[in-house]
Length: 198
Image (cartoon, rainbow, N blue to C red; front, side):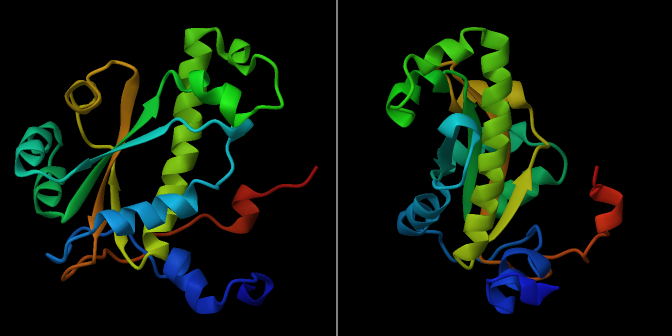
């Protein structure tokens, strides 16, 4: 089946088949240039109505790391303490303010998101899509990602998005995989279990 995908097989492997969530990393730093290259690639991934609610805070300083680690749960604390780069990924709940320049063909696109609850739901949904792109982009850069949702979301949001406009959805450790970085491949559902035709 892999021959039906136009990407070379080794690229398919790097992005999906042999890629895993990394649990350990080397000490090699992740540069701002690498992060920018990843973003410049993944920003083109499609979202609903070109919404771009993804917001990322790179946790680089020891002081910021010390604020984040206690807010992680269980084993995520140690992983976050040791990763070369940690990204707190959040949703901009006021993403609609950017829509006039992102969808210039529409008159008053913000009106579609006048209801705060619907706006938050859309922000979370489209940020989740963008998080998927971010993870694949990290892999495309030859790095590994360790996405985690085991943390105190309210506390992380308050600590790293203090304006109240953003909501932390995910914390991602990023770097070169270290020793014993991978768990074995866990099962996946078969095509027939997921896809139906009507």
